[in-house]
Length: 257
Image (cartoon, rainbow, N blue to C red; front, top):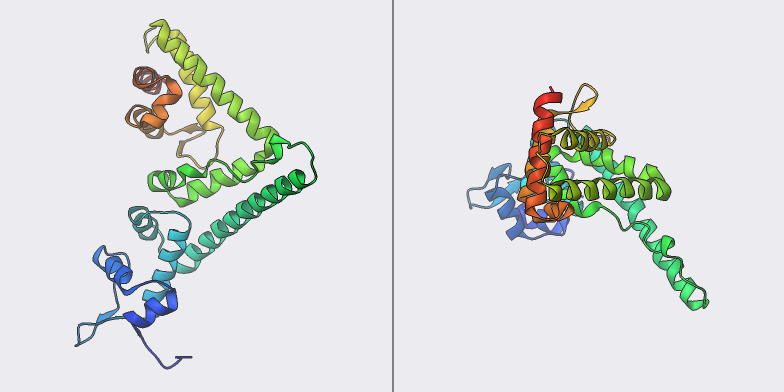
């Protein structure tokens, strides 16, 4: 115990946190975890407030966030206790996801060892949409991701399957509309854009103006569809994504405040 200590050296903090002095110096250089003081010998020292900040940083790293996203999250969280409560909730969600993955793999092993037929619907529980987590949190915050993630898990398998089919049908209709050569500001394109905005509005945790998705949010997503090839692929490529963007922009200008 070091109850009498007011601060800890960088070497002590590295040992306690299971990290390295080099990592701590990097966190200082980027302004993420500055030391509480610099000794006469040039060594960095950390007080309790710095250790608390470091704990939050390491927790966010474990949740998959990059340094820029961590900096944004911490900058927006002034209450240490409330921030830790949110991180604890996220850790519990991650714990639940890992438990589901473990149970899924265990069921697969048992099925194989028993010579039974594999059930596809039981093989992928816990393997889902979290690959976009860091991007969502960077753009709209950790709370937005946590809210939408809890909603997604609450849908259950049938609800998730229905949602995926809704998205697939919408994407197919967008691709067909773009290929038909209609104007992005046409009645047909407006109808598709309305379906798209209603789909976005069915998910929680997104920025809203009243009951509708915020105009800036819709326009930002529309630009992302074009800028990111992963999203453009949903609409048949860059040309299709540009059509979706232009149709959403026309709809937003007329219908979203």
